[in-house]
Length: 101
Image 1 (tube, helix red, strand yellow):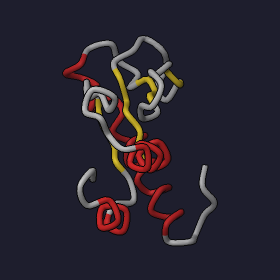
Image 2 (image 1 turned 60 degrees about the vertical axis):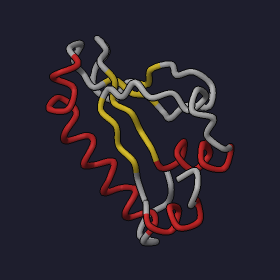
Image 3 (image 1 turned 135 degrees about the vertical axis):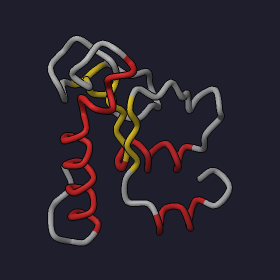
């Protein structure tokens, strides 16, 4: 994404992470990539809040929401339905079938 942003933006409609420990600030990600990923990305993190509850994220990071489970190994399973709903909504948006959330 950093080196080929225009091509990346054309091909990628959504990015879904499950309890990712990435850091865009440490990787020196360009502002345009951060802005795109903040719109098109979501990270379901291990947390004791109910599924999809917003979780505070550092500045310049992808939106974080609770995966509905506190154990890292269970986050992918726990958020699977929500994750696929997110992908479907993003696809509908880029296809022009729905407004952006």
